[in-house]
Picture 1 (cartoon, rainbow, N blue to C red):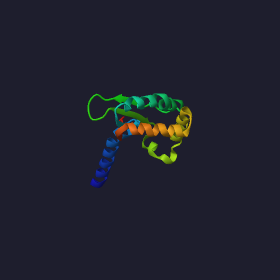
Picture 2: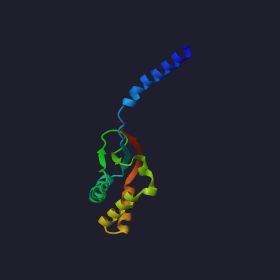
Picture 3: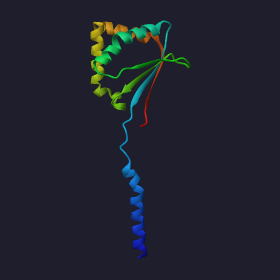
Picture 4: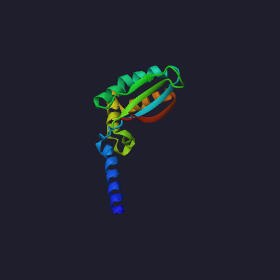
Length: 141
């Protein structure tokens, strides 16, 4: 008899403590971001900003990609911070499924005029960057 009462109490306590878990709402999806910190050689920031506003940002917008936010930092070791939303989260790092990035590159090449000009612009911009750091973050629902 004691054993039956103990089993009934255990079952009841499990049901009571499980109720709040069952009643919880589904967790909201997290938003993942790529954070890129950049420092430039003298005059590099202006040329970089020109390339971004003329070629890269319009290409991203045309393809429906999230806009990149540029934060010009006023303190610390970095000149700018670029915040880019990653709609597919960390799966965006999988370059085997990088159709969106291939389309972005094609769009930029089309805006510049040729693959050679696009390559020259990338090399010029890379030469203006003295240091960079990339990290990732996400929101908590």
